[in-house]
Length: 193
Length: 197
Image (cartoon, rainbow over the protein chains, first blue to last red):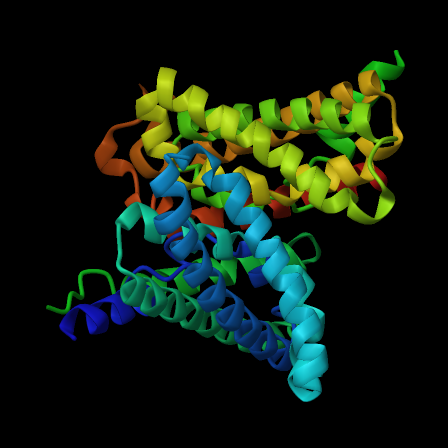
């Protein structure tokens, strides 16, 4: 139990995927102009990351490791993630139209979200078990959502402020992200268990 | 002359980092020092040139509907080759770039250039476009890496400029990456605006 709590705290705060590991920066900068879309993107990433990590973990354990095909990891994982996102889109459209209309626009963007592939590779590198991998993936995605929502809140305010013209848009957003990352550094050193 | 213009376009007009703002994850994640930034830039450029050439060569054979998955497979193949090469010949560099080597496959610069350029230009032009964009990316990463290394530890490529005690470590850590890139893009915006007016 304590390992799970430790994984959760570490993945959300100490080793936040955006602020400490620099993964998923593209959606972090791209989909953070409005709070509502930031929350939607966060939910979609959580869903896909949990699913993709489970599927790739099983493939790694029962296909790649068994047949000694470790070098196929990158190709297989990216294809699996792309196929998964496509399938998820079709299934959601059929089964849960409400959920689909909420997450729909964000789903195709997730294929190129390096956080999803990154987490799938990281859990195999860390040698986590299936349960630990799932917890790690969900916690990482929650950390991503937290970062995205915090940042969107700041950017909504930022849009109303007077900023020197060369700094407008991405530069000032990056500097704000830097300050947020500095705040997250305060969590460094926390360890549970 | 025309080929030079393609390279100039990638290096300056459509610089992937400073103008198109693509490939932000490796830009921030691998520029803790000048040398890691430079190596990441070169690694990405290598994959970009090869996949641009390969995709330009097969562009008429791939049905339009499955072109994106096909492009991803081509890119992933070259990334896997690069991974094997680095594991065999540059193990320490492979260690320091870590997860960002396999993640070249989801770098939007690659899919973006193959889709926007290589899928409708000749092989030779695509190779030059790969070189140009690759150089632009490498220059950007090396510049950001040098600035962060200098401000953080007082060295550039390991050569000491000022004593280490004057450096502020935050520039080597995560927040410094965001802040340094933010100011760098602001400076470049300022220069571009001034040249325009």
